[in-house]
Image 1 (cartoon, rainbow, N blue to C red):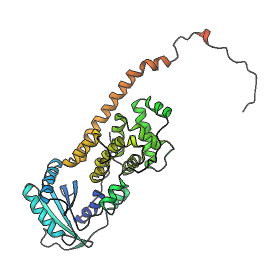
Image 2: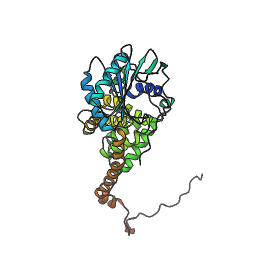
Image 3: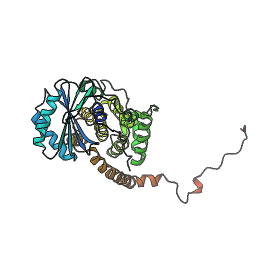
Image 4: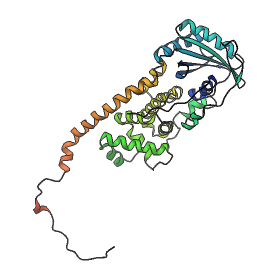
Length: 346
């Protein structure tokens, strides 16, 4: 069973607005409109940051409609930024209401460190609060200044910082049962997350995650913890080049499941044609709630591990049996004991 994902406690509309940079990974400015899908005023199902000048609002409204339908959102919060924020928020809200007539819409405006609810007749400007303290406690990295800076944070390093395992080390790991390999990978990732790694921890994670059974279990182990998710991202970024596509798909999946779709998308851009990367990218585009995917993984990953262990046991049984001591050994082949010639005692 996977750990429950930590949640952030919010009590006001300002708390929700203050979370947006953390959700999308970077600070929004006067060219942006943000759209949040929500359920019951509290549960955020998806977040989209729209560059108003580079996107057709009609196309965005259709994409938001698909995401809202898939995620089960019952309302949309449209937030405009900067001097033109109110005009843009109202314009997009009206357009979205035509495409999404079954959803309630709320428009808000953020400008010069203050916010206001546009569709409330008695609303007044209020100061923007600080981001919820829970975000720092959960280990979320601070939002980048720009989208470009955020995406650079999740791009692979120009030069690998993790050496591949030596051939004999890799062979020894590969001979272990799936459960043992997963246990080693989890322990290594935990030490990296705690900033107390052993010399070969990163190399072991990079190697072991290449296996499908290990990969699924590591994703499930990583995503409930921001520290473990970030540790997996750092392994992917510094890994040997041949390991990066698979590690990128695993890190992207963990980011997506932890609710950081924008950051996941930045990682998955470098995952090549990995099948898992394609599936997660499609889920992001469709607005599939991470919780729906995590429920599936919580069921299928343990089932897959049991099958993998059973297959490993079946395939290795002849070799393991040959290595066992015989039940009735031939005593004539056992050398006599060495004579006691004395020696120092301790």
